[in-house]
Length: 332
Image 1 (cartoon, rainbow, N blue to C red):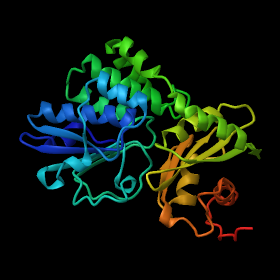
Image 2: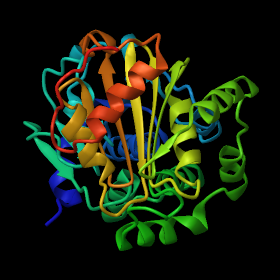
Image 3: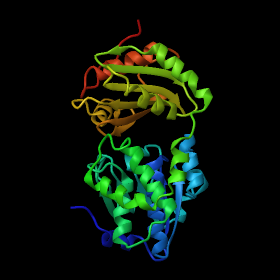
Image 4: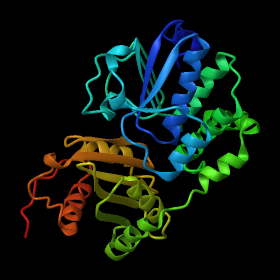
């Protein structure tokens, strides 16, 4: 049985000063904005802190157009807050950050580890954290304005891949209740944000490196300003006929980032990512979409980042043996 608003309310105030920590994407931004409203409605204050910069253009547009106030984590002092909260994420998704405590954790990803937080609501069966946050707003009888309704709907849209993956009745009910209140024009502007022309070179590189083996595409595109281009490419290739599993890798911010997509009912991308890569860094996700991030200094010695063939061989070796960590192979 899921927690209810009355269980969460004692952590919300009055008089609290809360830090809401997120890795920014549409679902986490919308969910953080909803939690901030809950704190404010209980006569408390809350700051949305970004663990990493917002690089995707559509996410920057979302923050700007929907007036979601955020600050960089490096600009705040954790000691200055009476509450520390995570939404759309858990402690294991912030491996390099020391959190002295956690007061609130609300997420829809599979449980990473037991959380010593005062309040924890983890619902891996739910398509989006935005859906969970809307349930709290409803229980609290808080009116959801047009901008927040638009943000929550966009969070549900993106995390369910336009209702094509991991969509539940709870997500559908939340979306149906929110949709009449959204600003459809703003939603359209956010969704139709253009891909920067400089990113087209990655499409060219990925298409030239594409080899489909056993309905699987594994591609390394080298260094990137942001791992978001790997997300864009993974979403593109998983729609190609004959491909049922995709792993797109790049190096961003001193990490090897691997984005997984699956259309194969027998291949759970989240479980595969966690099973094969969590011993090297952070890894996990959902059945259809997952991600792994490995600090480059933790990669096996045989992996040469200057060589796309080397990185792709490393990924292929692991993916060929689900559930096991294969031994390193010497470079030929």
